[in-house]
Image (cartoon, rainbow, N blue to C red; front, side, top):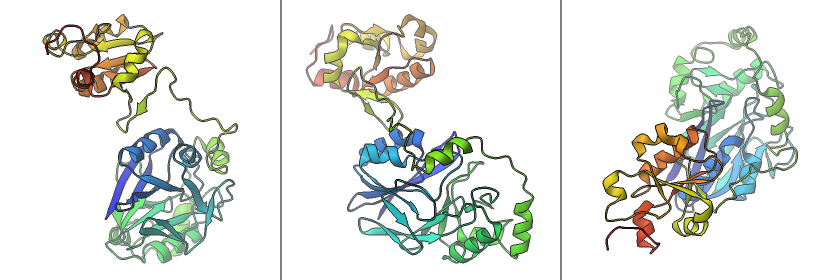
Length: 356
């Protein structure tokens, strides 16, 4: 059995794929995005997985890979094609190689065309394949830069991808319409560029006249990706230092009750419960400012932007939403109290009011 998650970066419309062996908890992450590395690491932690490797299908031109940063965060190896020209990888892959994760593996298939170093990763039972920018859903990647070659792409798709079993699911690195998955059978029948009776000359003619502008980030992304995503000065994105926090897959920072108690003097606490709860049996944290969740957006100006903020509610659910609202309002240092007042009281921290 596999653990499988399809992840999305809205800025670049990139799909990343977390694939793990359920028994051993060994995982690989395909096509990670630098800005999403903290999110991906949080998911890996929450699922209790061990990230053994990040895999890039090619040197991307529209985003910076998260490979280097995830190696820093998770200790994972970096793997990509030997034809990519990238420096700093732990493993350079060739056609026919296998990337093992626990008792499962991905087979490497060379599929040049979008770039010279493109590869497709095929799951060991051929039930799924990750096609990068070579074959997209009812489309294909571009062939007009980075050693792109429409003839090579046509042959790659026809010989290495569309020869897989008809039911094999195909997962691309991008989609700009919200589509998430296709299959070999579908693309054989309905891909207007590469399916049906489309010949090599037809495809070359189609691709030669696309006339698309270059990706906006190509001058930044390609040099960075040729370093496997390593910044110029090995700079890891700054983590909050005002308290020990945990980043969750929900996209918010959490603070544990004992850490909040330790840092309460330098932190402003906003309790977003309703009035009867704030003055009810659970009590309240003595220094907390009471602003019900429904009034938070309107009253955010009552809070200081110079001190970290911790949102509190009964269980941590409403205050998680409060954390999001505060971030949208421009507050930078925001965290949610993990477990809310229920956990705060259960662990014996001081409250004002309330009943035993």
